Image (cartoon, rainbow, N blue to C red; front, side, top):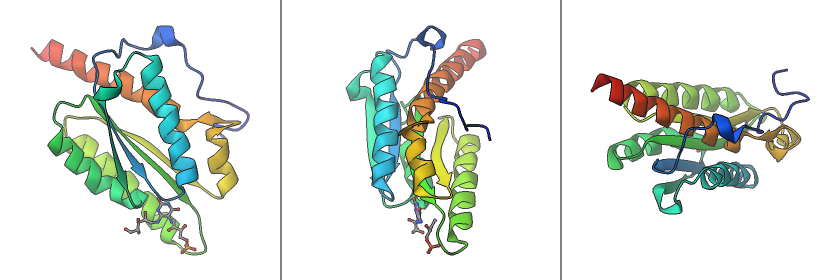
Length: 168
Ligand SMILES: Nc1c(NC[C@H](O)[C@H](O)[C@H](O)CO)[nH]c(=O)[nH]c1=O
Ligand SMILES: CC(=O)[C@@H](O)COP(=O)(O)O
């Protein structure tokens, strides 16, 4: 398993672009908030550690992961100055196939928003079989996927900035 036995949240600050002037959006699902709040904190802490100004971080909340799609579309439309957006969710399998549809729907929706908009969207949605897997990946033994998402957001913001520079 890709994550098993590993903590993927450790990163080398020397390899992270200067994030001081970047502006980020983050949308947090309220489902499984014990998980999503830890994911948010992991992302927020990485951005602060990399000199992002608190006032340059915009947070919205949504009821569940499926609503991340619409909220992200509206955030892209509303805050065109953002350099990247992170969407945060925790989907945990239940008794029915609903888990499959929510996970696939969010995945495809966020993929589409990356294609349709100039603002990159980072996918920080845990899709786990049970709560322990979620705990392990939101500040537990396998690190914090929120921290990883924040690093990805910085790197993609820099890639977008470089692309604009080369395009002229
Ligand atoms: N079961 C989980 C959900 N389900 C709710 C959906 O995301 C959505 O809010 C609802 O279908 C109304 O549109 N959401 C999660 O984020 N995590 C879950 O485990
Ligand atoms: C992902 C879900 O919506 C799921 O957790 C809901 O649980 P159930 O499938 O038992 O209704």
